[in-house]
Image: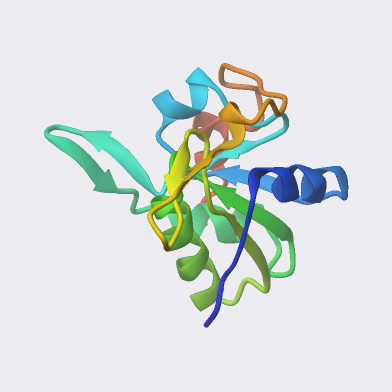
Length: 142
């Protein structure tokens, strides 16, 4: 299955068109800054010695979003969001795109740096917004 990967600017346009940005970074990363209106559903959680897969990722996504929901997934540099997009598509989600440069930026297939959302001057917000923070989203799991 092929995942469509879009730039931060294209992701911003999708949000203006009614898509939802799902930030799959950790709670701490999300709190430090994210696109306005984004929801936090981490694909991995901070754990002793690094990160551990979030066992509730798919069940929360399935409870919170319809299979045809228009979703942009994003992370820090593009790796976790691409993995999340593949997992969601495998579960039957049909309108998933990956914001390939993430929040900070990532490398394209030629090794060139592409700046992420926070580095191209797009709007941002901080904190754990009520109803969109992981602490609220995880209550929606099946």
